[in-house]
Image (cartoon, rainbow, N blue to C red):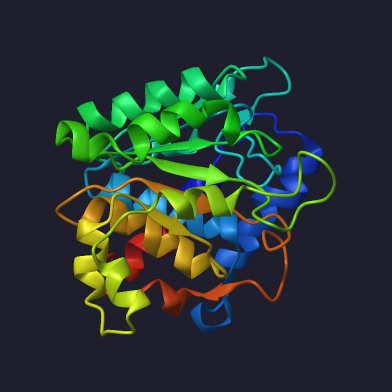
Length: 274
């Protein structure tokens, strides 16, 4: 329960205490077979298991501490002093660093910085979360010139993960699409020829030789494994992840604790402590 382990001296907002901290504690205190994990809890588990294994996690974006849809709450604000408390910074099992940075609203500058960060420190899972809207196009030149083609031009790999809100499930202008089609057009892999000719595909070879991964996930377990895979494999690839909105709190879009296997990725004792 490290992600919601907040000392009593921190005066949390009453609504946050009820809707996030207490509810997650109750969830993780249930019998293991009855636990159904939502997206935010699965993300916290992915981050926590990685930093427990010695990896670091860095997430940036406007309001990313809270989460684009107020679902993450990586930090808690003391209502008395306005100081911030990051639970993972005080977790005894943490071997890596956990940094969640509320950046300025500049897609071009911030995504470019995080791309460079992922180059320099491949041991860190680097993520950029788009603000509440379809605004990754503000960083289109970073996506085109660096993310999609950087490895072939400079022979350096990046594991940057783009969290793109809405996917196709938003509502109204500028809040309806993560522009999935643009990212799919940028994917380049020899395995695509096999797809078009209906040949069998070696998916490990597909991901190794692709310039980037585009993902549209449907369960928290999918999300958990994708984040961990970024650091567990021996190479790095950027990921454009169509992060959902409607699925974040949908009761049907949850995963069992057992879906977070296989056991060699993370022990059940470490998972339950998150």
